[in-house]
Image (cartoon, rainbow, N blue to C red; front, side):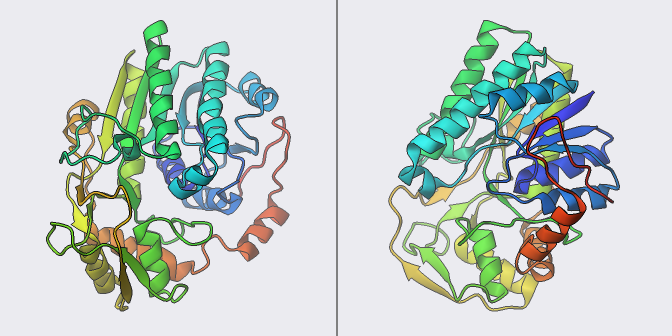
Length: 361
């Protein structure tokens, strides 16, 4: 039986797909490609030397989602699919609630109908909101401060209620901190649409000349250099955390919540310095006022994931920056349009759930 990966073409999803294939799992991917590209899955197939089914459908399309479940057998689901931009969620809250919350409900309904009760859910440290408690543990009070974070918090509550109603389910909820980095090959990485919302891809695009400078929001925090401190985790470590969570849900019948972070905080300027070292490029920056809601220091207590999942982040700041730079150098325009057009010529993506494409190696 296969592992269904929703949102498998995304940044974290694609790296997790590769790790799953390398571990011998059969996967099937669902993605609507609204903020990802089929090219990422072609590269997953190339690196793993394996083929897999991919359905281009939306989780809100209940009929096509049912067709996927009725024509395949799944052992578990890893659920990444969702909108994820904080600023966009503030401007379009109804779209975020419908997509993220309703989509998760429809997925769980399909899983229940077809007897698939093992789920790894992609949550976020945004559920903690603005907290001065560090390190942040899973017991820290939840206080999401924007629609995106609240959709994740709501989904967590829905999954907890689902488990309480039927304890034959097995669910792992993963709250990740700040994913960065790329696959060591330089073939796969983060490809944000438009101007990046996160620090590392922004720095990368400044280094490669796509953006003129980095904007630093606040340099008067009570930190080592005045800039905000965050917990950055390598995307491959994060992907491996999903495999450990999958092993957990396949072996037990329980629900667990786990932080995935390094337990180490780095300031904005420390990240800039490390990236300049990795790239040999200067990163110009300008200072602007703090953003409302930003805290000085935020990093995880990852001990629960270590003790209960047997997982620990192993890649440090230097490797995060080196791998990000290798990806950016090799792919200055990300999964660019030319590659995507070629991908469409070779591997058509169909709109019906009964059809699929097989990425070629």
